[in-house]
Length: 173
Image (cartoon, rainbow, N blue to C red; front, side):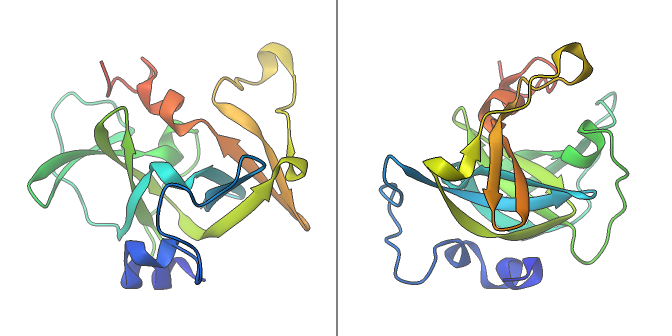
């Protein structure tokens, strides 16, 4: 499913046909992740952290905010900080028709995360997930929970809750 179709059809498009829309979607040996692109890489985050996916709209800029904090938007009465994950990961951040905001609910906070595009919802079994590479100081893998492999696709699985709660982001106390 294209990211444009996901955005246009709303958050209900995140639940595959025939799946229950409850928190009991996956078993202990399986987990569902939302896959998305930042630059040339494909990432995955726990689908249960995703509130909705929205098309990108320029947020209201906040003075003295770090460059990766694009600003805030009013989402049905809730002020939501918008973080550009592309900038945070050191990638170029051009806006295109595929650019979307993944609205997350982490640590009882709502946060928007700008990514290049959203691919689909994938179910990963325990056998599909490998531990993150150990490259010492060459790679900061604090927020990588593993690498998911589905066919020829390789997903970098992120601990989005840990990432958003980190002092680097400065969004959660």
